[in-house]
Image (cartoon, rainbow, N blue to C red; front, top):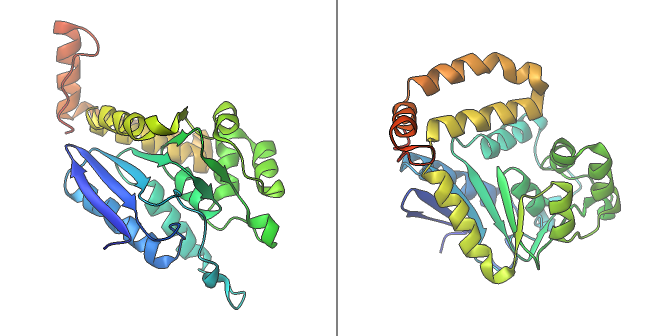
Length: 254
């Protein structure tokens, strides 16, 4: 059975981490995850839900990858990997239960939205091994909630409860564990029913601003806006607003 499973549920791509026992990260898992994302986009999915079939969302990196003390990949490879994880052209939601530690937390941080069970625990544990997070966790937490919180999470290397991280703004929503699957798929379906071209533009601008500031995002505004105005969904949205009111459009994703 594949260590990353993919299935299509309407317009939502369900991507499930399935590497016993705890979805420990190695290059094979990362490549399988990227392949599942690519398949979802190729099959016309308009949103992706990333979840786990194991006890934990992802308990971190496979420590065998650290044998010999060598770096796992060169800088250009790391940047390309993170760009591919973050630049999927549709919204990606992470549904987190159990542990999301180290690289598992960082995988969740590459998603656009994070929904977590109230029993989950998340954190960057690398400093306890004399390391730093290897998949961009420090800078992504800093982008979401500021450098002081990023330093706190990474330096103390503690396991954090999701309610605290929701309050800080690291994650988007905390729900009872029994409600996680329903809440996450509900968000995914809502986004999959939305104006896909506009949502892609929003994601692009937000990601560019996070990486390069407002000055990096602003130059893309006009090009993205032109693409939106040429889309079928723009016409559908405006027509529905004028004829039946806001919130009534049935977007096609084109």
